[in-house]
Amino acid sequence: MTGYIGGSVVSRLIDHPTHKHSEIVVLVRPSKQNKSSVLESLGLKPVIGTNDELDILTEQSSQSDIVFSCVRLV
Image (cartoon, rainbow, N blue to C red; front, side, top):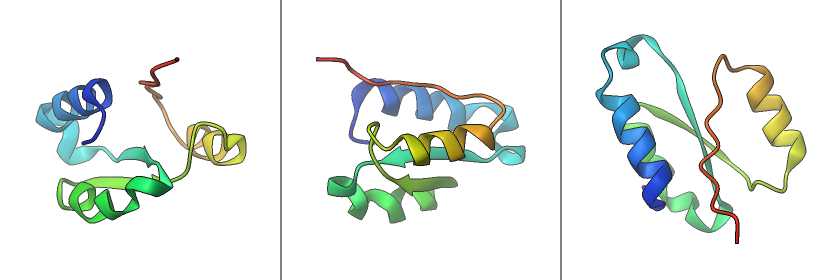
């Protein structure tokens, strides 16, 4: 994980007993796309995009039961 907060949240989700029965989708910035294989090896589904791409955010959130936003606003 590259972000401290997002990485901490994902770490807790991976450790949760329901992780084996859940699909965890993580938004990965294009500049960090090389992290995708690491995320996949942890059982996560990476989606390449940014927080400015509302079409991707809308599509992914419409397919989700829970959405965590771990964005640091500057």
